[in-house]
Length: 147
Figure 1 (cartoon, rainbow, N blue to C red):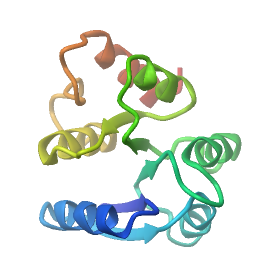
Figure 2 (cartoon, one colour; figure 1 turned 30 degrees about the vertical axis):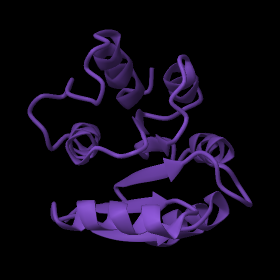
Figure 3 (cartoon, helix red, strand yellow; figure 1 turned 135 degrees about the vertical axis):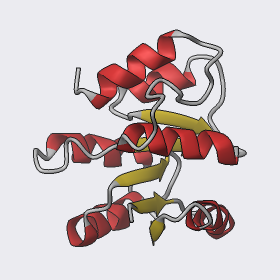
Figure 4 (spheres, one colour; figure 1 turned 120 degrees about the vertical axis):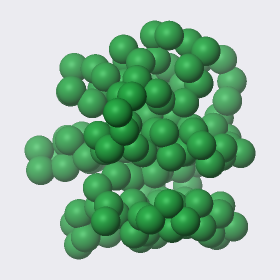
């Protein structure tokens, strides 16, 4: 069973994500900020991280930067889960080291596709959310491959 770490400061959002993931058979661990997420990663080594961008103590951008700087964690798939949905936000997020981008409110199908693609448990590896932009498949593939 794959383990998903949810790093989200809003308890309602954490609970919603937990329910969506557990109904799909994932094991879930939680953190309420980036600093706590880094501790949980060290302790449990989750398979993937769903990371809110706007959190107290250590935000999502600083958290992913620390993850990417650590050679033992650099390949951990990290998906931004955010309310940032303005034009250009997705590109900024992916350029900063995230492997995927999901905007709130979360769509259960998009969440499942993103996780399955990044974990390699989905046949269609290009089926990341927001398929209206064909360049996203190339970006996601390059991010997974560390390019």
